[in-house]
Image (cartoon, rainbow, N blue to C red; front, side, top):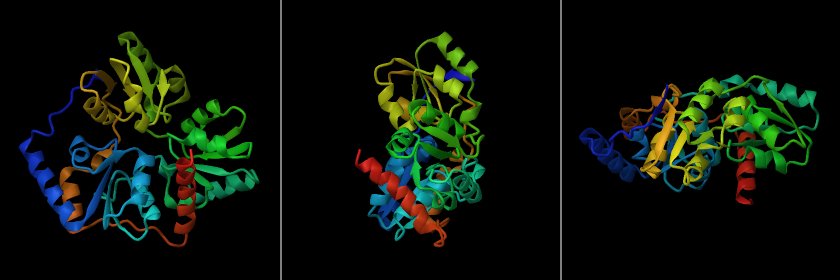
Length: 316
C-alpha cells in the first residue's frame, strides 16, 4: 500500500534508551565501530556510528581504526568490511541475514560469461558474494555503476547480478554494450515495484524517486533514479516526495527533512535487512559472536575488485 509515512518515536522510548546506553557502554569498552545500512530498523540506525549506503559503509570499513567492526546489514556487506580491513575482527548481528539478489549469481556463471566474451570485463554489483567478486574485474554500487562502466576502455561490459541495474547503466552509457549476467537477476523487493505504483503516486502529486534496482519501466517513469545515499539531497527542494525503495529508507529521510510529506510502499520490506533487532546487536557486541571470515583462497582477488572501485571513487 502506498501511504504517507509517520515517523515512529524511537528516541523517547525507555526501552530503547536503556538499549542505547548499553550499546554505548560496550562500544567504548571494546573499541567497536558500528556501521548500519540505510535499510536497518530505526532502533539500530539511532545507535550506529555510521549510517550509509553500500559504498559509504565500504569506505568507512576500509578506514576504520577501531578494534572491532560491527556491520548491521546483510552478509555481503560484512564480507566487504572484512576484505577491506582483514586485520580487524568483523561481526554481524545476524549471520543468517543474506541477500536473495547475491544468491542469483555464481562464480561459475561469471567464468562462463567471460569465456563467451573474451576481453570483456565483469563489473559486479557489490550485492554479491565474495566468491563472485573474486572472479570479477571491479565492483560497483548503485551510486557509481554508471561512472565505473563509463571509465572502462572496453566497449562490451559484463554486469551482474542485477539486470535492472544493468539496464539503468545501459541507458546512461549507450555507447557501450552492457550484457547482464544472469539475464534475469533482480532484487525481489525492488523488482515488485510497478508502473501502477508510479501512476498512483502521480495522482497524489509530488516528486518521485526510485532506486536503480527497480524495473526499467519504473525507472523511466520516475523523476529521479538514485542510490539511497543520494536520495537525501535529491528531495531537498520538494515538499511532497514518493520514495520507491525499501520501506525503512523513509525513516532516515523524514529524520533529515521532518517538515516534508513522504510517501512509500509499506510492502517494500527486505526481511533480511529487518532481521537485526536490538537484542541481536546487544548479543553480538557483548559476546562477540557471528564473526565474519572470508576464504583466503579467493579473498585477495575479491579484495582487489573492491579496492579498484574505491580507488576510482577516490579519484573522481
